[in-house]
Amino acid sequence: MRVEPREGQEIYVTLDEVFDFKKVEEFHRCYKQINTAQYKSVAINFAQTRYMDSSALGMLLNVQSHFKTHQVPVRIINVNNQIKKILAISRFDQRFSIQ
Image 1 (cartoon, helix red, strand yellow):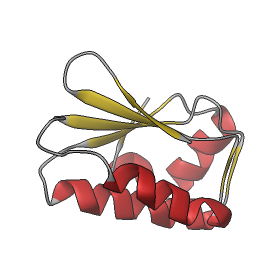
Image 2 (cartoon, one colour):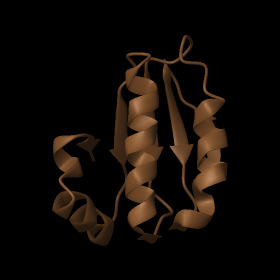
Image 3 (cartoon, rainbow, N blue to C red):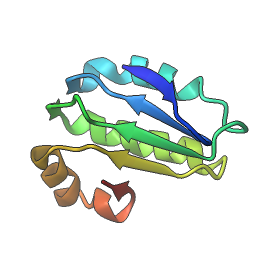
Image 4 (cartoon, rainbow, N blue to C red):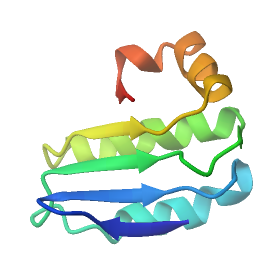
């Protein structure tokens, strides 16, 4: 998992192949280090992610809540079809921009 500044004022949090309960602390550290004054949006990048469990849904809600208090939108990008289905069933498509 890594944090990657992009051009402009967006930053990516790029996830590993597995996004599950074992990643809670690492994910928390990654997004907490982001300077909300410097970036206007955050993208959670699922490009390498093949599996996520229900705890990952909670982590996404936590990251959204954290950045919402700083008025920084969070979007979800590069999801595969399986993860897109999980997000849709959980109605995350109504909470996040998913691409």
